[in-house]
Length: 156
Image 1: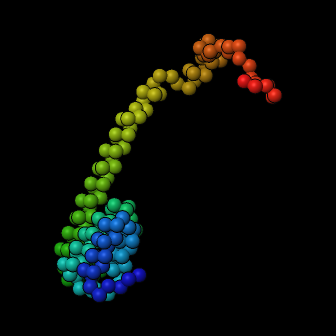
Image 2: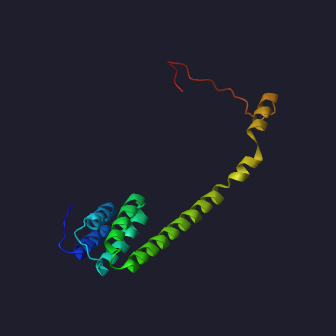
Image 3: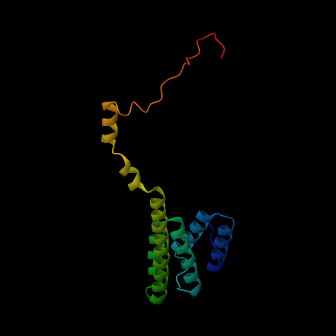
């Protein structure tokens, strides 16, 4: 756990970690800063940090991190400036809604690609079993030709 002299340094470090693909470490860095009670004043920098934090939480599906961070941010900003908390929550809801819509469209695209209804419409399992029991399915089975398995010691 790194302690930063200024919150701006933690934000800069998180952005560096994101740039090299270490998003989980960036999220943990920002989480440590937000939950550290070391920065009691509700600053504009802390709001920017919360925006980045919320973006990472939505992207990484870190619901627990988002909850903890928002609760801590509420405690810090509740007495001083509630408007910043409102802005952060609106940003969180916007990102979350976008991510949910994106997932919904992907699921619909996959469902359309699979087209499950048409697969089941051809034959039901009961009809398929009945056709094999009655002998209808056996007529389409290819007859074996004059091939026999290779016996041990023989060459093909």
